[in-house]
Length: 392
Length: 138
Image 1 (tube, rainbow over the protein chains, first blue to last red):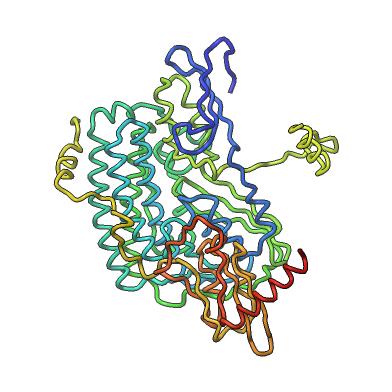
Image 2 (spheres, chains in turn blue, green):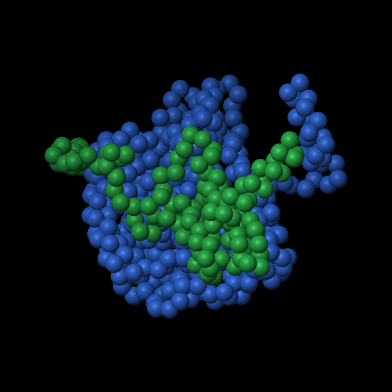
C-alpha cells in the first residue's frame, strides 16, 4: 500500500491491536480519515509446518489441531482427509457424520465468539457478555461429546474417537433449541439496535466485484454476495448427504457480515439436527497404515472463517515430507487494507474484527528462492555468530 | 429501529442467579468423557510401546524391568501430556484410561507431574537403580 509521507501515521499493535493477538497495523490519517493502511504479520510464527516433518503421521494430527484454538477440529479434519486420501482408505460413514457434526458445532461456537468480539469492538459490551455466556452452552456440548472444550481431538486417522449415544443426542437437541432461540434474539438485536446499526451499516462496504478481485473468502465474501462455500462447491465428509445452504447477503458492509454469520449459525443448527436424526450406522474407525504411500494430496474444508487448504506430501515413510497449510484469515487481509481507505480511524477495530481474523493461524513463512546468492539464507554458523554479536 | 433492545434481557437478569460458578467452593461434576489424568493398568500390558510411539507430547515412558515376565513401569509426565487420548485409542489391551475425576492437576512444584505407575516393588527397584546410577555419575 503506498502512503503519503506528509501524513500522520498511527501505529496500532503489535500488542493487542483491538484483538488479543499480535499484529502491527499502520494507518495513515488525514484528520480522522484513513488514507492508507499496511499490515505486518508474523509475530506468532511457530514453525508448525517444519515441526510436522519431524513427527509421525499420528502425532501430527494433534500438532495440526493446535494451529488454531477456535477451529481446531477443521484443521485436524483437513489433515486427516489429506492423509486418508494418500493412504487410499475409506472412512466409515458414521465417522464422517460425527466429524461433520463436530465441525458444525464448532462453527456455532466460532460464530458466537465472533459475535461477542465484534460487538465488543463496536462498544456493545452487553451483547459481548451475553453472547459469550450463551456460547458456553455449545462448548459444554462439545465437552460432553469429546471430553474437552477447546481441543476436542475427535479425529483419528481413519475415523473418530467418540460415538454419539442417544442420550448425548438428546442433550445436543436441548442445547440447540436454546442456542437457536438466543441467536434469533441476537439477530433481532443487531438488525434493530440503532446505535449498533450506526456502527455497522454502510461501513466497509465491499461490492461483489471487489470481493472477487481481492480474493475474499468465507463469510466475509458471502456478505458481499459471493456464493462460495467449500461445503457446497466441493462436498467432503457427509456434506453431500446432509447438505447446507450457502448464506449470502448483498449489502457487503459490516452489518451484512453479522447477518450472514448469524444465518450460518441457524443453518448449522438445522444440519446438526438432521445429522442427529439420520446418523448412519456402522463402525467408527478403519485401519490406516503407519507408513503412508508416497504421493501428494490437497484437501479443502470450509472453516468458520472460510476455505482452509492443506497440501500434504509423503515419501512413503512414517513422517510426512511436507505439510503446507493455507488458512482463511490470510486471504482476507487485503480486504481490510483496501476498505480502510476513506473510513474513520474509529471504525478500524470493527473493520479488523469484521473478517474474524486469526493471527496465529496465518503466520507462516515462505521463502522465495533467489538463486545462489540469497541474502536471506544463512548457515547455522552465521546465525549463531549473529546471535553472539547481537547480545555482546 | 429501536433503542436498547437488550434492556428487557438485562432487567430479567437482575432476578437470575449469576452465570458464573463458585469454583472451587462449589464443584460441578465433570462429564463422563472428560479427559483428565492418565491412569495405567499394568496387568494386561505387553510392552508393545505403541502408546509411547504415538504420544504427540512425549509424555509416556515405558520402562522395561523384565521383558520375559512382563514387568514394566510407566513414567507419565503429566506436565507434558496434552490429554488427547491417542494412547488410549492406540492401546490394544485397554491398559490406559483418562480419568474424569482426577483433573485438577495444577501444582506449584514439578514433582507431582512425575508419576510412576506399576507394581510397588518394580517402581522401588527402578528408583533404587536410578539413585545408584545418579550417585555414580555424580
